[in-house]
Amino acid sequence: MVRFPRVIADASRARRRIRAHSHAFDSTADETFSTRRSLAQQGKHDEEDARDASRARQFTDEERRWFYEAMESGLVNEVSKMKEDVETLRRGAGATSNDDEDAIERALEDLIERVESVDNAGDLHAIGGMEALVGTLTRERATIRAAACEALATTTQNHPEAQRHAVEAGVIGALVNVVERDGSDEVRAKGLYALSCVVRGCEEARRAFSLGGGARACARLIGHPGAERVRVKALTLGKHVFTQSEGDMASAIEFGAVPNAAACLASDDVNCREAAARVLLDIARCVDFEKYPKAVDDFRSQGTIARIARARETIAGMKDPDDVDANSETKVALDALDAMLA
Image 1 (spheres, one colour):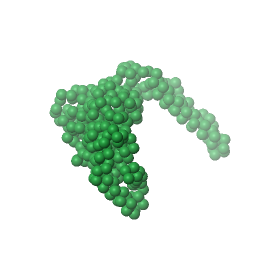
Image 2 (tube, helix red, strand yellow):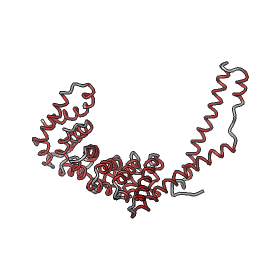
Image 3 (cartoon, rainbow, N blue to C red):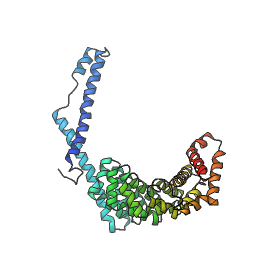
Image 4 (cartoon, helix red, strand yellow):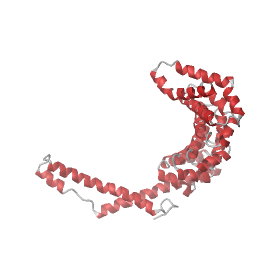
């Protein structure tokens, strides 16, 4: 049998999966037999049915062997497909034809689907998948760059092992470059989402994010003049990173997180308004105002105060119960913020 790095080489894990499925296979037959026997005993079948139930077919050794082999073959095929996808990304590194671009895009779509599996996501690095995705972030076609960001996000979301592998592969720096410089707002939004997935709950990733200027990029993008989706993703990321270290807080203040977030309070998007209110409240609660006088100036500026007041007035004037409910979290954050700044 062909062996692949770590994925199938870890035979014990493969056997555990096979045994798990085989137990389900066996229990299905047992449950069928038990159900039929119970029904017969309850008098819901005549004697002939009861005899049939007592003779419920048992799986032969050959059938069980076929089942085990099919399961193991499925595991190997899964890894083989991932390797093919990664190889396609590598081969296309220097290619620019439409056919090459199409092949890369198809490979990314397939890879995104496969790394939804926790096991596949954890093993992607073993076949060079992380590095291949980083290389794909600079492709000419925007949809490819966006798909590469999505693949990185799917791989690392709630997956500590994959997050650490991403840091080792230089994913943080590559994504920060994407969100700062890419000309496509769709790519930038997916890059911010990928950064959120890599950084959240991973100390190694958070440090790499700080050292790579991630907080600076995030603060600036909260005031992005383009698509609102970019601002929402930047606010969501900022809510998790600005208060995690003094360095990130300093970058947030220096690069305009407070006035940028205050401007987002006027958004028509309820998610944008809520994220902006949470970012402002978290910064106000955690920043050292004596150490960062700019934070005092930003929060006390007429623009910030006026935007907070207008947002509170807008929510207070809502009559539709659905609107009131949708804005409840924003109201709580703004009321707390107003009390702090009074």
